[in-house]
Length: 327
Image (cartoon, rainbow, N blue to C red):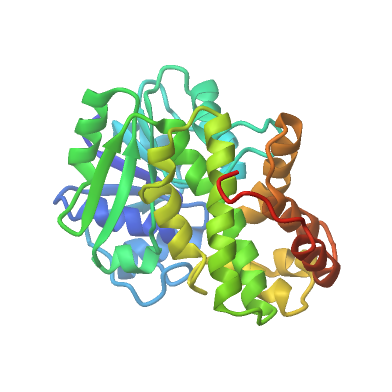
C-alpha cells in the first residue's frame, strides 16, 4: 500500500475530486461502476457520461475493480448516499482513512453517513468533505472553498494538506455532524426552491424560503449535536445559497420540474444522475417528526415527492400562522 489517494465513484463529483487530487502531482485511482466511464477516462482522459467536455489529468487512472483500492491509503468516498454502505462493505477498507464526500441520510437506518461508515469500517478514521461545489467548476479549477470535518485535528490537517489546492481552499472543523447535516438538509431545501422557481412565484418567495429553510436546518442540526457556526458556514449556509439558485443543481432542477407540473415519480425514473434530496426528504421528515423538530418546508417537499399536488401543499404552507422569526 502506498501513500496514495483513491476516489470511489465515477460520477461528476467523484471525477472532479479526482482532478483536484491529481493536481498534487501523483497518480489518483478512480473507481467507477460503469465500464464505459472507466474506458473513457483511461483512453481519452474524459468522462463524457457525467462531466462532458472537461479534459482530465493523465494522472487519473480508472478501474472497475474494488480490489485495486487496496493500493491506496486514503479514499474519497463519492458514491450515492444510499449505496455507500454496500460499496464500502465490498471494498478492502481495513484501516484506510475515509473522506466522505456524499450528502444525505441513509433511508432505512436514519443514520448520518459518517455513522454508517463507522459501522462498516470500524478500523478506519472518518472525515467529511462538504461545501458549496458544482462539479464542473471544481474540475475546471475555478475557485472553490470547502469544509473538511474530522474530530482528530492532526489527521484532519494531514488530509487537508493532501487535497487542498490554491483554487480548492479547505477549512478544517471538528464538527463532523454539523458538516454532514448542512449538506444533507440543503439538498431538500434546494428542491423546495426549485418548486418555487417552477411555479413562477418570484425572487422574494425564494429568498424567504432560503432564510426559513436555514432556520429549519439550524433547528435540526442543533437537536443532533451540530454547532451553529458550522451550519452558518460553507457546508451549511454556503452550500444552501449555491444550490437554491441554479439549475446546475440536480436537486433544484428536480424541484423546478415538479413546480412546472411534472410527476415526481416520473422524474425520478428518468434521471441517470442522482438528486440526493429526493431520498433524504422522507427520512429527514420522519426523524424531525419523531424528535418534535418543526420543519414544515421539509415536510412539504416530502409530501410532494410522495405524490402530493403542488397547489394544495403550497396553499397549506402559505396559510400557516406567523410566528416569531427567531423560532
